[in-house]
Length: 384
Image (cartoon, rainbow, N blue to C red):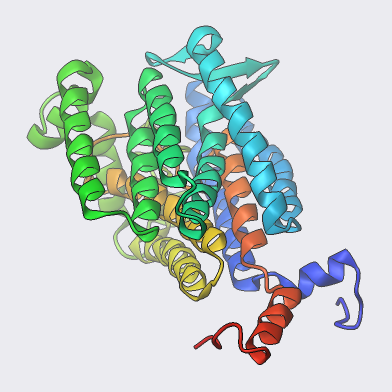
Protein backbone atom coordinates (compact mmCIF):
# COMPACT_ATOMS: atom_id res chain seq x y z
CA UNK A 1 0.00 0.00 0.00
CA UNK A 2 1.23 3.48 -0.89
CA UNK A 3 1.26 5.92 2.03
CA UNK A 4 -0.57 9.24 1.82
CA UNK A 5 2.53 10.89 3.29
CA UNK A 6 4.61 10.02 0.22
CA UNK A 7 4.96 12.68 -2.45
CA UNK A 8 6.33 10.69 -5.39
CA UNK A 9 4.66 10.41 -8.80
CA UNK A 10 3.35 6.92 -8.03
CA UNK A 11 1.91 8.00 -4.67
CA UNK A 12 0.26 11.05 -6.22
CA UNK A 13 -1.22 8.86 -8.95
CA UNK A 14 -2.50 6.26 -6.48
CA UNK A 15 -4.31 8.78 -4.28
CA UNK A 16 -5.73 10.91 -7.10
CA UNK A 17 -6.90 8.31 -9.64
CA UNK A 18 -10.60 7.52 -9.96
CA UNK A 19 -10.51 3.93 -8.70
CA UNK A 20 -14.08 3.21 -9.83
CA UNK A 21 -13.19 4.04 -13.43
CA UNK A 22 -9.99 2.02 -13.14
CA UNK A 23 -11.84 -0.98 -11.71
CA UNK A 24 -14.49 -0.82 -14.46
CA UNK A 25 -11.89 -0.76 -17.24
CA UNK A 26 -9.87 -3.62 -15.76
CA UNK A 27 -13.05 -5.63 -15.18
CA UNK A 28 -14.10 -5.20 -18.82
CA UNK A 29 -10.66 -6.32 -20.00
CA UNK A 30 -10.81 -9.33 -17.69
CA UNK A 31 -14.25 -10.29 -19.00
CA UNK A 32 -12.99 -9.92 -22.56
CA UNK A 33 -10.05 -12.24 -21.92
CA UNK A 34 -12.35 -14.77 -20.27
CA UNK A 35 -14.81 -14.65 -23.18
CA UNK A 36 -11.98 -15.12 -25.69
CA UNK A 37 -11.68 -18.70 -24.41
CA UNK A 38 -15.33 -19.25 -25.32
CA UNK A 39 -15.57 -17.29 -28.56
CA UNK A 40 -12.28 -17.63 -30.43
CA UNK A 41 -11.41 -21.39 -30.61
CA UNK A 42 -14.16 -22.21 -33.18
CA UNK A 43 -12.94 -19.37 -35.42
CA UNK A 44 -9.32 -20.51 -35.13
CA UNK A 45 -10.27 -24.10 -35.96
CA UNK A 46 -12.19 -23.02 -39.07
CA UNK A 47 -9.08 -21.17 -40.23
CA UNK A 48 -6.85 -24.19 -39.60
CA UNK A 49 -5.04 -22.54 -36.69
CA UNK A 50 -4.27 -23.70 -33.18
CA UNK A 51 -7.45 -23.65 -31.08
CA UNK A 52 -6.05 -21.02 -28.72
CA UNK A 53 -4.37 -18.90 -31.41
CA UNK A 54 -6.62 -15.89 -30.84
CA UNK A 55 -6.61 -16.38 -27.06
CA UNK A 56 -2.82 -16.10 -27.04
CA UNK A 57 -2.89 -13.05 -29.28
CA UNK A 58 -5.59 -11.48 -27.12
CA UNK A 59 -3.34 -11.94 -24.07
CA UNK A 60 -0.42 -10.51 -26.04
CA UNK A 61 -2.42 -7.40 -26.95
CA UNK A 62 -3.58 -6.92 -23.36
CA UNK A 63 -0.02 -6.31 -22.10
CA UNK A 64 0.74 -3.18 -24.19
CA UNK A 65 -2.88 -2.02 -23.89
CA UNK A 66 -2.76 -2.01 -20.09
CA UNK A 67 0.68 -0.36 -20.17
CA UNK A 68 -0.67 2.38 -22.46
CA UNK A 69 -3.70 2.99 -20.22
CA UNK A 70 -1.62 3.27 -17.06
CA UNK A 71 1.06 5.37 -18.75
CA UNK A 72 -1.42 7.92 -20.12
CA UNK A 73 -3.25 8.11 -16.78
CA UNK A 74 -0.15 9.80 -15.28
CA UNK A 75 -0.46 12.73 -17.71
CA UNK A 76 -1.65 16.22 -16.84
CA UNK A 77 -4.46 17.79 -18.92
CA UNK A 78 -1.88 19.80 -20.89
CA UNK A 79 0.08 16.64 -21.66
CA UNK A 80 -3.16 14.92 -22.71
CA UNK A 81 -3.80 17.71 -25.23
CA UNK A 82 -0.28 17.47 -26.62
CA UNK A 83 -0.38 13.68 -26.86
CA UNK A 84 -3.79 13.84 -28.55
CA UNK A 85 -2.52 16.37 -31.10
CA UNK A 86 0.44 14.17 -32.03
CA UNK A 87 -1.74 11.07 -32.19
CA UNK A 88 -4.36 12.84 -34.34
CA UNK A 89 -1.80 14.08 -36.88
CA UNK A 90 -0.14 10.66 -37.13
CA UNK A 91 -3.42 8.73 -37.36
CA UNK A 92 -4.87 11.06 -40.03
CA UNK A 93 -1.70 10.71 -42.09
CA UNK A 94 -1.89 6.93 -41.68
CA UNK A 95 -5.55 6.94 -42.76
CA UNK A 96 -4.54 8.73 -45.96
CA UNK A 97 -1.76 6.19 -46.56
CA UNK A 98 -4.20 3.34 -45.95
CA UNK A 99 -6.38 4.57 -48.82
CA UNK A 100 -3.49 4.10 -51.25
CA UNK A 101 -1.25 1.44 -49.73
CA UNK A 102 -3.46 -0.28 -47.16
CA UNK A 103 -4.68 -3.85 -47.10
CA UNK A 104 -8.10 -4.30 -48.68
CA UNK A 105 -10.46 -6.37 -46.54
CA UNK A 106 -14.06 -6.96 -47.70
CA UNK A 107 -13.85 -4.01 -50.08
CA UNK A 108 -12.51 -1.52 -47.52
CA UNK A 109 -9.03 -0.08 -47.07
CA UNK A 110 -8.72 0.53 -43.33
CA UNK A 111 -5.58 -1.38 -42.41
CA UNK A 112 -1.84 -0.84 -42.72
CA UNK A 113 0.38 -3.92 -42.46
CA UNK A 114 3.60 -3.67 -40.46
CA UNK A 115 5.38 -7.00 -40.50
CA UNK A 116 3.04 -9.63 -39.10
CA UNK A 117 0.78 -7.02 -37.51
CA UNK A 118 -1.99 -4.88 -38.98
CA UNK A 119 -2.97 -1.47 -37.61
CA UNK A 120 -6.28 0.30 -38.13
CA UNK A 121 -5.41 4.03 -37.87
CA UNK A 122 -9.04 5.16 -37.54
CA UNK A 123 -9.27 3.44 -34.14
CA UNK A 124 -6.48 5.65 -32.78
CA UNK A 125 -7.93 8.71 -34.47
CA UNK A 126 -11.16 8.56 -32.44
CA UNK A 127 -9.91 9.41 -28.91
CA UNK A 128 -7.46 12.00 -30.26
CA UNK A 129 -10.22 13.61 -32.32
CA UNK A 130 -12.48 13.88 -29.27
CA UNK A 131 -9.78 15.54 -27.13
CA UNK A 132 -8.76 18.05 -29.81
CA UNK A 133 -12.37 18.98 -30.58
CA UNK A 134 -12.97 19.44 -26.84
CA UNK A 135 -10.00 21.82 -26.74
CA UNK A 136 -11.32 23.78 -29.77
CA UNK A 137 -14.80 24.07 -28.26
CA UNK A 138 -13.31 25.15 -24.92
CA UNK A 139 -11.11 27.81 -26.54
CA UNK A 140 -14.11 29.26 -28.35
CA UNK A 141 -16.09 29.32 -25.08
CA UNK A 142 -13.18 31.03 -23.30
CA UNK A 143 -12.51 33.57 -26.06
CA UNK A 144 -15.38 33.86 -28.57
CA UNK A 145 -13.13 35.71 -31.02
CA UNK A 146 -11.18 32.46 -31.49
CA UNK A 147 -12.95 30.44 -34.25
CA UNK A 148 -12.68 27.19 -32.31
CA UNK A 149 -16.11 25.96 -33.37
CA UNK A 150 -15.28 26.60 -37.02
CA UNK A 151 -12.01 24.70 -36.74
CA UNK A 152 -13.84 21.82 -35.04
CA UNK A 153 -16.33 21.70 -37.93
CA UNK A 154 -13.50 21.68 -40.48
CA UNK A 155 -11.69 18.93 -38.57
CA UNK A 156 -14.86 16.85 -38.44
CA UNK A 157 -15.31 17.31 -42.18
CA UNK A 158 -11.76 16.01 -42.81
CA UNK A 159 -12.25 13.00 -40.54
CA UNK A 160 -15.68 12.15 -41.98
CA UNK A 161 -14.35 12.40 -45.54
CA UNK A 162 -11.49 9.99 -44.77
CA UNK A 163 -13.84 7.51 -43.07
CA UNK A 164 -16.32 7.58 -45.95
CA UNK A 165 -13.48 7.11 -48.44
CA UNK A 166 -12.40 3.84 -46.77
CA UNK A 167 -15.47 3.28 -46.69
CA UNK A 168 -16.51 2.90 -43.03
CA UNK A 169 -20.01 4.24 -42.49
CA UNK A 170 -20.28 2.81 -38.98
CA UNK A 171 -17.26 4.69 -37.69
CA UNK A 172 -18.51 7.80 -39.50
CA UNK A 173 -21.85 7.60 -37.67
CA UNK A 174 -20.11 6.95 -34.35
CA UNK A 175 -17.75 9.89 -34.79
CA UNK A 176 -20.58 12.18 -35.91
CA UNK A 177 -22.76 11.22 -32.93
CA UNK A 178 -19.98 11.89 -30.40
CA UNK A 179 -18.92 15.11 -32.08
CA UNK A 180 -22.53 16.30 -32.21
CA UNK A 181 -22.98 15.56 -28.51
CA UNK A 182 -19.88 17.59 -27.63
CA UNK A 183 -20.96 20.46 -29.89
CA UNK A 184 -24.36 20.48 -28.19
CA UNK A 185 -22.65 20.65 -24.77
CA UNK A 186 -20.55 23.54 -26.03
CA UNK A 187 -23.71 25.55 -26.73
CA UNK A 188 -24.44 24.80 -30.38
CA UNK A 189 -26.84 27.44 -31.80
CA UNK A 190 -30.21 26.13 -32.96
CA UNK A 191 -29.40 27.13 -36.52
CA UNK A 192 -26.38 24.81 -36.47
CA UNK A 193 -28.52 22.02 -35.01
CA UNK A 194 -30.94 22.31 -37.91
CA UNK A 195 -28.19 22.58 -40.53
CA UNK A 196 -26.09 19.71 -39.19
CA UNK A 197 -29.15 17.53 -38.57
CA UNK A 198 -30.21 18.04 -42.18
CA UNK A 199 -26.68 17.29 -43.36
CA UNK A 200 -26.67 14.04 -41.36
CA UNK A 201 -29.96 12.91 -42.90
CA UNK A 202 -28.72 13.89 -46.35
CA UNK A 203 -25.49 11.98 -45.79
CA UNK A 204 -27.33 8.81 -44.81
CA UNK A 205 -29.62 9.07 -47.85
CA UNK A 206 -26.60 9.63 -50.09
CA UNK A 207 -24.81 6.62 -48.61
CA UNK A 208 -27.92 4.48 -49.13
CA UNK A 209 -28.20 5.65 -52.72
CA UNK A 210 -24.59 5.40 -53.87
CA UNK A 211 -23.00 2.73 -51.63
CA UNK A 212 -24.41 -0.71 -52.50
CA UNK A 213 -23.08 -2.42 -49.36
CA UNK A 214 -24.81 0.16 -47.16
CA UNK A 215 -28.09 -0.22 -49.03
CA UNK A 216 -27.78 -4.01 -48.86
CA UNK A 217 -27.33 -4.06 -45.09
CA UNK A 218 -30.20 -1.66 -44.47
CA UNK A 219 -32.50 -3.59 -46.82
CA UNK A 220 -31.62 -6.88 -45.11
CA UNK A 221 -32.37 -5.32 -41.74
CA UNK A 222 -35.71 -3.85 -42.81
CA UNK A 223 -36.99 -6.74 -44.92
CA UNK A 224 -35.23 -9.77 -43.41
CA UNK A 225 -34.44 -10.95 -46.94
CA UNK A 226 -31.04 -11.91 -48.35
CA UNK A 227 -28.01 -13.23 -46.50
CA UNK A 228 -28.80 -12.67 -42.80
CA UNK A 229 -26.85 -15.69 -41.56
CA UNK A 230 -24.73 -13.84 -38.99
CA UNK A 231 -27.66 -11.94 -37.54
CA UNK A 232 -29.84 -15.05 -37.40
CA UNK A 233 -27.19 -17.19 -35.70
CA UNK A 234 -26.37 -14.43 -33.24
CA UNK A 235 -30.04 -14.17 -32.30
CA UNK A 236 -30.29 -17.96 -31.98
CA UNK A 237 -27.28 -17.98 -29.65
CA UNK A 238 -28.92 -15.39 -27.40
CA UNK A 239 -32.21 -17.29 -27.35
CA UNK A 240 -30.50 -20.58 -26.49
CA UNK A 241 -28.62 -18.93 -23.63
CA UNK A 242 -31.84 -17.94 -21.86
CA UNK A 243 -31.35 -16.30 -18.44
CA UNK A 244 -28.47 -18.39 -17.07
CA UNK A 245 -26.69 -19.72 -20.17
CA UNK A 246 -25.69 -23.16 -21.37
CA UNK A 247 -22.55 -23.13 -19.23
CA UNK A 248 -18.85 -22.43 -20.00
CA UNK A 249 -17.78 -24.31 -23.11
CA UNK A 250 -21.28 -25.71 -23.71
CA UNK A 251 -22.36 -23.32 -26.44
CA UNK A 252 -23.04 -24.84 -29.85
CA UNK A 253 -24.45 -22.02 -31.99
CA UNK A 254 -21.28 -19.98 -31.37
CA UNK A 255 -19.36 -22.48 -33.51
CA UNK A 256 -21.04 -21.30 -36.70
CA UNK A 257 -21.01 -17.52 -36.06
CA UNK A 258 -18.32 -16.19 -38.47
CA UNK A 259 -17.08 -13.29 -36.29
CA UNK A 260 -17.88 -14.72 -32.88
CA UNK A 261 -14.63 -13.42 -31.32
CA UNK A 262 -15.04 -9.83 -32.56
CA UNK A 263 -18.36 -8.34 -33.66
CA UNK A 264 -20.59 -11.01 -32.10
CA UNK A 265 -18.84 -11.83 -28.84
CA UNK A 266 -21.88 -10.48 -26.97
CA UNK A 267 -23.98 -13.29 -28.46
CA UNK A 268 -21.43 -15.87 -27.34
CA UNK A 269 -21.55 -14.41 -23.83
CA UNK A 270 -25.36 -14.72 -23.87
CA UNK A 271 -25.32 -18.34 -25.05
CA UNK A 272 -22.78 -19.59 -22.53
CA UNK A 273 -23.38 -17.34 -19.52
CA UNK A 274 -26.92 -16.09 -20.01
CA UNK A 275 -28.85 -12.88 -20.38
CA UNK A 276 -28.24 -11.90 -16.75
CA UNK A 277 -24.48 -11.97 -17.39
CA UNK A 278 -24.98 -9.78 -20.46
CA UNK A 279 -27.00 -7.35 -18.35
CA UNK A 280 -24.00 -7.05 -16.04
CA UNK A 281 -21.83 -6.12 -19.02
CA UNK A 282 -24.36 -3.49 -20.08
CA UNK A 283 -24.47 -2.11 -16.53
CA UNK A 284 -20.67 -1.72 -16.48
CA UNK A 285 -20.75 0.30 -19.70
CA UNK A 286 -23.66 2.35 -18.35
CA UNK A 287 -21.69 2.99 -15.16
CA UNK A 288 -18.69 4.26 -17.16
CA UNK A 289 -20.91 6.64 -19.16
CA UNK A 290 -22.89 7.93 -16.17
CA UNK A 291 -19.82 8.41 -13.98
CA UNK A 292 -18.07 10.25 -16.80
CA UNK A 293 -21.03 12.55 -17.38
CA UNK A 294 -21.23 13.17 -13.62
CA UNK A 295 -17.57 14.20 -13.63
CA UNK A 296 -18.21 16.46 -16.60
CA UNK A 297 -21.22 18.06 -14.88
CA UNK A 298 -19.15 18.95 -11.82
CA UNK A 299 -16.03 20.06 -13.71
CA UNK A 300 -15.29 23.81 -13.91
CA UNK A 301 -12.77 23.62 -16.74
CA UNK A 302 -14.46 23.59 -20.16
CA UNK A 303 -11.78 21.51 -21.86
CA UNK A 304 -11.90 18.78 -19.23
CA UNK A 305 -15.69 18.81 -19.18
CA UNK A 306 -16.07 18.44 -22.96
CA UNK A 307 -13.25 15.89 -23.27
CA UNK A 308 -14.45 13.57 -20.50
CA UNK A 309 -18.04 13.70 -21.76
CA UNK A 310 -16.94 13.03 -25.33
CA UNK A 311 -14.67 10.13 -24.41
CA UNK A 312 -17.27 8.30 -22.32
CA UNK A 313 -19.91 8.95 -25.01
CA UNK A 314 -17.56 7.36 -27.53
CA UNK A 315 -17.24 4.20 -25.42
CA UNK A 316 -20.95 4.13 -24.63
CA UNK A 317 -22.12 4.72 -28.21
CA UNK A 318 -19.74 2.12 -29.65
CA UNK A 319 -20.89 -0.47 -27.12
CA UNK A 320 -24.52 0.42 -27.85
CA UNK A 321 -24.00 -0.09 -31.60
CA UNK A 322 -22.28 -3.44 -31.09
CA UNK A 323 -24.91 -4.73 -28.68
CA UNK A 324 -27.72 -3.37 -30.87
CA UNK A 325 -26.38 -5.34 -33.85
CA UNK A 326 -26.16 -8.51 -31.74
CA UNK A 327 -29.77 -8.05 -30.62
CA UNK A 328 -30.84 -7.37 -34.23
CA UNK A 329 -31.96 -3.89 -33.29
CA UNK A 330 -29.54 -2.27 -35.76
CA UNK A 331 -28.26 -3.22 -39.22
CA UNK A 332 -25.13 -5.39 -39.27
CA UNK A 333 -21.97 -3.33 -38.77
CA UNK A 334 -18.45 -4.46 -38.06
CA UNK A 335 -17.78 -2.70 -34.76
CA UNK A 336 -16.08 -4.21 -31.73
CA UNK A 337 -17.37 -4.25 -28.15
CA UNK A 338 -14.91 -1.97 -26.31
CA UNK A 339 -12.27 -3.75 -24.21
CA UNK A 340 -14.02 -7.11 -24.72
CA UNK A 341 -13.81 -8.03 -28.41
CA UNK A 342 -10.63 -9.43 -29.92
CA UNK A 343 -8.52 -6.96 -31.89
CA UNK A 344 -5.17 -5.33 -31.27
CA UNK A 345 -5.89 -1.89 -32.73
CA UNK A 346 -9.29 -1.70 -31.04
CA UNK A 347 -7.96 -2.90 -27.68
CA UNK A 348 -5.00 -0.50 -27.54
CA UNK A 349 -7.01 2.43 -28.92
CA UNK A 350 -9.79 1.97 -26.35
CA UNK A 351 -7.09 1.83 -23.65
CA UNK A 352 -5.83 5.17 -24.98
CA UNK A 353 -9.38 6.44 -24.48
CA UNK A 354 -9.49 4.94 -20.97
CA UNK A 355 -6.10 6.47 -20.18
CA UNK A 356 -7.31 9.91 -21.26
CA UNK A 357 -10.40 9.52 -19.05
CA UNK A 358 -8.32 8.47 -16.04
CA UNK A 359 -5.87 11.33 -16.56
CA UNK A 360 -8.58 13.99 -16.91
CA UNK A 361 -10.67 12.80 -13.95
CA UNK A 362 -7.86 12.62 -11.40
CA UNK A 363 -8.43 14.61 -8.20
CA UNK A 364 -5.81 17.33 -8.40
CA UNK A 365 -5.08 18.92 -5.00
CA UNK A 366 -3.29 21.89 -6.57
CA UNK A 367 -6.46 22.80 -8.52
CA UNK A 368 -8.67 22.59 -5.41
CA UNK A 369 -6.19 24.71 -3.46
CA UNK A 370 -6.19 27.31 -6.23
CA UNK A 371 -10.00 27.39 -6.28
CA UNK A 372 -10.14 27.80 -2.49
CA UNK A 373 -7.64 30.67 -2.73
CA UNK A 374 -9.70 32.43 -5.39
CA UNK A 375 -12.88 31.93 -3.37
CA UNK A 376 -11.35 33.42 -0.23
CA UNK A 377 -10.24 36.38 -2.28
CA UNK A 378 -13.79 36.88 -3.55
CA UNK A 379 -12.84 36.21 -7.16
CA UNK A 380 -15.00 33.16 -7.78
CA UNK A 381 -18.13 31.74 -6.24
CA UNK A 382 -17.96 28.50 -4.23
CA UNK A 383 -18.90 25.22 -5.93
CA UNK A 384 -22.31 23.86 -5.14
